[in-house]
Image 1: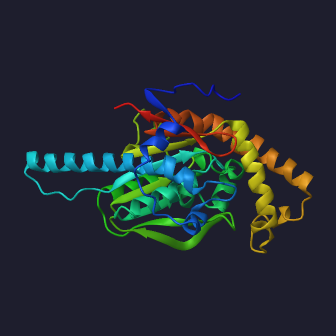
Image 2: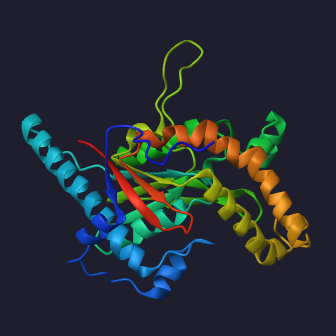
Image 3: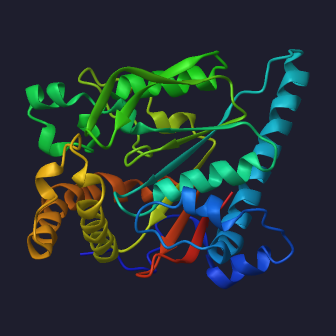
Length: 315
């Protein structure tokens, strides 16, 4: 059962969509419909009005955090009589499969770039263990659960970027073949901002066997967003996306999911529902949604995929 929609999940301010729209009234949106179409994920009906009313104010809030973090760096350098380079500002974006976190991440990247910042986006999919390793560990059916990632490599990657290292690389994941692409990497080179998108990026540190606690990737975040919706809505969006992919990507001969391309619509709905009920739904309930209260901002969507209200952590 979903948690009540008015559950405050922590020390947050709750602002309705109309409040955010008022905040954006005097801001110009320099974004074309074609650019938004390139950003929009499958099944996400986000339009320019929603970008203007929700994501412009969100970008302004991020910029406030960046500005004040910069002032803190300056004051600390003066106090310590140092001249250390300001580190990369790291934003985490979390949420369920099919909730729209990829659209949110790409949109934030685009809007922040238009403010003049250098912004890189990395998804945690690249840090999933290869399928062969998942199969060896008996985890292939739990892909996306916290234990299916190389968490140590992910933490090391974000730590190195945050430390100001040059040319930090991350593995590449292909959704078409449903696996890590051997030998392929992306390189992050001291950006102003790094956006880290993933199902479980807000997970806290977990105790080791000896009782010590390791670092978590969320320990390096300066700002974080959780994209939220009722489980009923997300499940419906997941099924709709599956049906769309059955008509498109699944028909690619190199797709891992070609076996689903010829399913009848009824069988496709049943298959997608079963995958949700046995994998994505339990992952949401057990691992993803419990991290929601750790976010700086929670964006809550209604059944039509539109943001209805926003929660901002009190400072």
